[in-house]
Length: 109
Image (spheres, one colour):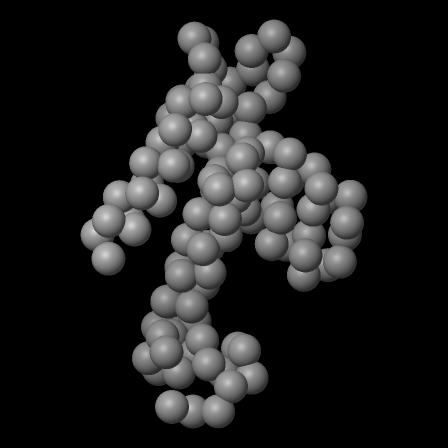
């Protein structure tokens, strides 16, 4: 299990380093402008990607997918899903498993 986490995190770091150069915003937010081009971080890309999918906006889906590598986008979408399920579970005073199964339309375990 830890090998998979290490591999995913290593891929995330490699993608982050590949996208960042001298003078880029390497920290959270990724809002520095270098050469007139705004950089985006993986969490921003994931938020735009997921909201665009929910609204069926193919142009925004494509735009967000171009901001980061596919691996980084996958990591960000996964993190967003985890945080959303945890927030809903706390709000509903239910377990994350119950909330996740309900959101996917699966029967209770």
